[in-house]
Length: 88
Image (cartoon, rainbow, N blue to C red):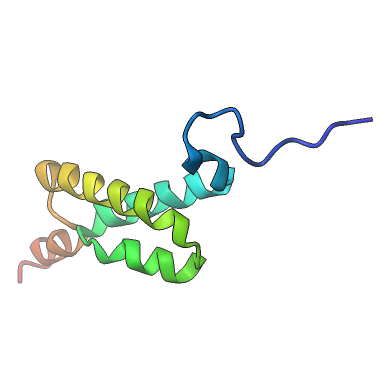
């Protein structure tokens, strides 16, 4: 009889990991990617409103802030790139 895979990390020492499912990490990564591309922090609020999970907001905010700082050092935002391509 196959055993069911756990959806939480119960062997982790912190209490946050027991609250988040594996899909929560995917949401955090997607929010960080969207925040880095657009150079906006409001992505975290949009993700919070879409998911409705209040315990995901802290990791989403931290990931979006770090991704935004790294992306600003590397390249302009997607909106600035479009303006440069159209020579406006």
